[in-house]
Image 1 (cartoon, rainbow, N blue to C red):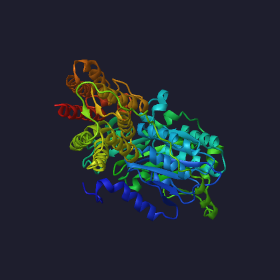
Image 2: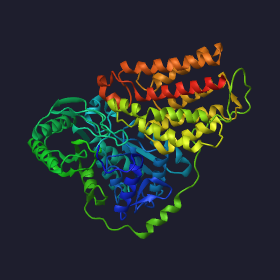
Image 3: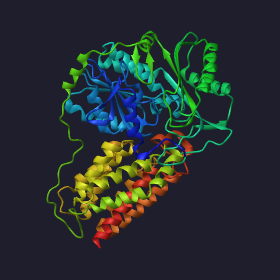
Image 4: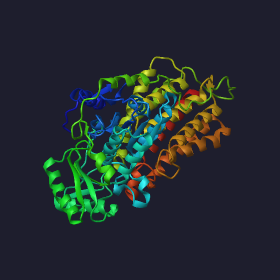
Length: 579
């Protein structure tokens, strides 16, 4: 792998730093969060703010659409991973001009979780939040299940229309309705000719054999919904257009906007070859192209391929699409420089933070039987971190087979950062778990960040104030962690997620604890391993892998595997200390 990279762990921060320097006339960093990019014209007093966010590696999306009459603030995530809830919340605060904030983002588990949490976090600031979720990717779910479709390049039209409606002075409800209309009018499809490689992994998530192409490929490097023999540009363009138009069901006379985006390593001249055929196909159907965008608008690192998005226009959305806007990733017309008075909007920010999902403190609980001291058990979290870091490559490898390949990278980054911050502090176990939770939720993001972040936060709350953790205390810790995961996600046993490990492990501990602490720990470990192994034969029902259907069978779930590592290590650590 030959790339212009220093340290893979620093790639996102260095990307943002260079982007802000290159486009300082349009964007700036939020002073309280280096993972939030803000328009130099934002916030606008009395105007609805526009926020989005997503994983890095898609440039110019997401940061590239920050500008005037477009997006006001963007939350930046790790490569192919959702921004944290804190970053989304800080972006909302940065965009707030007093008329509410519309958060327009893609339909991914991590983004859904973190945006929901961010909206709750800014309640204390008096900010009203509305959300619109993009779901334009035709191949990711059938028409009857459109709510399950992922958002891809159609998000760009959603940002453009939403930003234009806000610029016209529309209310929060008006902006939400316009953005929803835009994404409802979008259909997208992607075709991949070559995979991409996450720098921290060092090899592609999947392979595209010579002479073949993946139809319905995802922007995160997910395999397509089917593999076909490589076709000519015209044949590929015809197929892409048929997929999109069959789902649209348009009649002759309609007007559309078309976006053809490269995935990162596709020569631009090939994109124009595709577009030439696409417009010809639209004209043959009696469809008129009002405006076309061809280039690298929404990429996927160095993937070879292209996406097609077609948005049906009416008079309102056509006028909003044509409204002047300037951003590094897209410009329509010219926009006058913002008035200097815009700077006064910063006074509206409220510094108070609402404490999120905090359980009631436990104080002086009676201890029965063998127990592990709470104070001084910070080494347990260090042991968890060591195991996760040691399995970084394995977790990313199995994640890459049916997902985006970042699970091990992000897990290792979060756990190792937490271990560094607790080292030598002499913290209690609950304090150490709290540090781990804070790192995962505020710095890592994705779906893993809030899921594991809340799990460890609730575990910490369950044992806070205890002098030691006996079998009942450990049961409380496990059940609190499970409750935290359930509150964040919607998965159940059998859905091919970490729940297939966590639920039976907790149940086995509780069923065996009357036989003693150590036997219960051993039962928990065995159940965790059995649950992990059960995911090999399951078909994913939630998350990115669910879009692959039967193609997700035969691979262990990465979340179930990492959860098993955590529970087994936790059980080993307690048994060792009980001895």
